[in-house]
Length: 195
Image 1 (cartoon, rainbow, N blue to C red):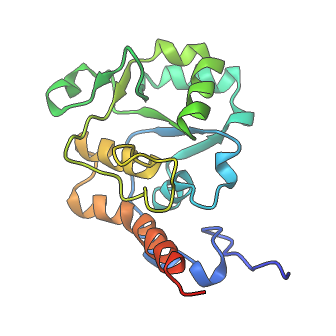
Image 2: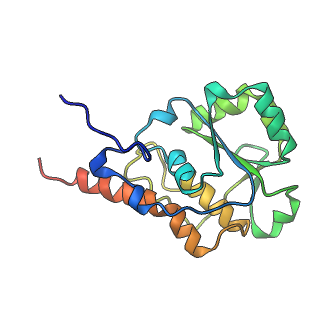
Image 3: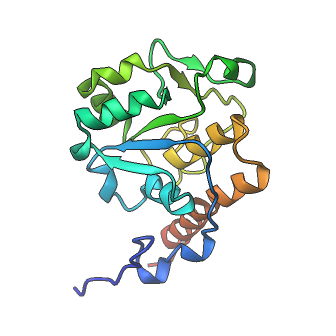
């Protein structure tokens, strides 16, 4: 079987290129995604889409996380967007608790994200917040079966956090999610294609 040509930018097959949906959204604050190595090669990886929409986002795979990076992260005074026993729900009324609007996101399955968290115990020293969006369901579940309806994809979580922090407006929220919506549309069309 011949290997399919992929777009060098979005890394999707040429006939499923998402670049036409990408409209860049500049960010003022630092956002670093610490990504599980295996997640980086998943075809439905949304952290890659986040980086395409906002080039200021730093995407670091788990094999490249080191002590120097962790120290650099700590200097940013970020919060960690990660749900655990001690995390606080990020809401408009407690945003004043944040030292800065810089934040870190762990990208991978829950199991892989927890592995990154426990491999680098310095991450537990960061203020830890999670999203609690009772009225929000993921748009991602139809293509990523391991995802529950209340578990947001990395791109959705980043988008909602930026919106809550006031860094993006509604139109930019839609811009950030546009490539993911197109990816889902393509996959759903493929899944419903007659054999």
